[in-house]
Image (tube, rainbow, N blue to C red; front, top):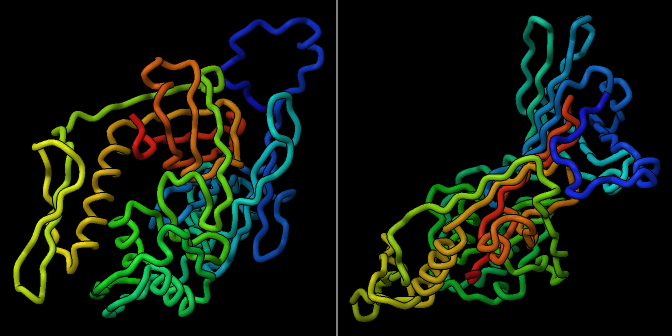
Amino acid sequence: MIAQPASQPASPIEPAQRDAWIMPVPDWQVTLDGKDLTAALRPILIELTLSEKRGEEADTIDILLGDEDGKLAIPPATANLNVALGWKQGTGVAVGLVDKGKYRVDDVSWGGPPDHVSITGHAADLTSGLRQRRSVNWTNKTIGDIVKSISSRNGLTAMVHASFAGTSIKAIRQQSKSDMAFITALARRYDAVATVKNGALIFSPIGAGVTPSGIALPSVEMGRDMCSSWRWNRQKRDEHGAVEAKWHDKKSGKRHTVKVGSGSNSRTLKRTYSSEADARAAANGALKRDARNAATIELQLAYGDAALIIDQPVTLRGFKSDIDQDKWLIAEISHRIGAGGFTTNVTLDLQPNAT
């Protein structure tokens, strides 16, 4: 039996509505190297958790299965899992499965009592090649050039947002860094996200509200009445209205400073950059990051939503007025299917330039 969510509709349900109401029932599908195991695993599934994060960290899947009869086979280390989540039926939920991608089995454990098998997998797109350390000098390249080169040698398709494709990089050193670590650091400089999804290396600005190909991300509304729990947090930091970054001019041998933002109370980045453009980009990125991280809110949705996307714009409703009026982005997502039904936890941070 699926447990009722803790959050109930704010208004009373009329008798006619109660008669028409259909209890939401979660659904999921797991295939192992192309073989559908859903029917076999359904009676022994204890919990399935899928986590998605912005940036370098790979999406992860954790599956906990009961093995009281000792007949459950341990999956091989080279196995790949395909996972889909959603709803079989229910009033107020989107019926159907959402494909959540492919995961490589990285960690398997067996224990008890009672006997159980725990399986952890990471997004299969992050191949070993992307994790291999390299030393490369990139000179007079655009971000588009760099992403295409890294994509090509790792068998991926490059998807670079138009606002970055032509951005020139005078000189940057990939010193004993993996391709993924390097491209993630470059994205951080420009307050962008570098990630691998569905065979593509994506480089896109955070909070742009569009995919790298220019398709608008649909905004989603999350109301207090949709949540089982919520927690808003604002961190007290030194208030900096500006960020400074240094750069070294090879021709003159002098060091210069660029400043973005306003106010006399500014912070200075530790690194020295190779050009004024690089320094300005890094300072702009840091200023946006400071604004975005000024506040966060964690929500547990009573009814899970597998269609949510990292960096999707969110409008909040029914919380405090100061919170509702801010503009938010999805920074982390965690889906969970188990005895409590299907729930989704999301962490939101502030959209850049939001007040």
